[in-house]
Image (cartoon, rainbow, N blue to C red; front, side, top):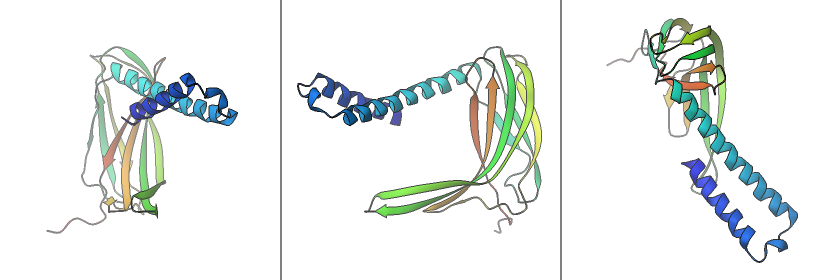
Length: 193
């Protein structure tokens, strides 16, 4: 939706300026700013098309973890399965385990906020190379991962968040990459009732 809104506003402004009688009165830097804003809009359109193309060949994945919630310093199994709609050659599949900390600050006024995000832990693992995937031979991978000993608990507060993510990236030959993100829950202590 943001992409549609961005492009609708920018194209309206550019076309209004272009066809106005006073477009020659604008300084050169105004045209440069409009050109940059148009370039950003076109970039967003291309990215959305590429993400949509990647999803044409692969169905929605299924990810299951052997334990839930996860605990720091404990290993857990992950099973990833994904069907193909059409035959594809997969160059590689990588899995990235990420702990992302996000803090939201007030920057002035009532509704002005800014969010800083930082990946405080990151581990990437290649899980498959050179696979031929088709509707009869899906991607079916099991792997062992571990939350580090000093891993933070998952948390969602009013202005702070700690999210554990499992990002799966599939590089398909001659096609845009497919990326899917799964949220995980990490708790240090078992919940007491």
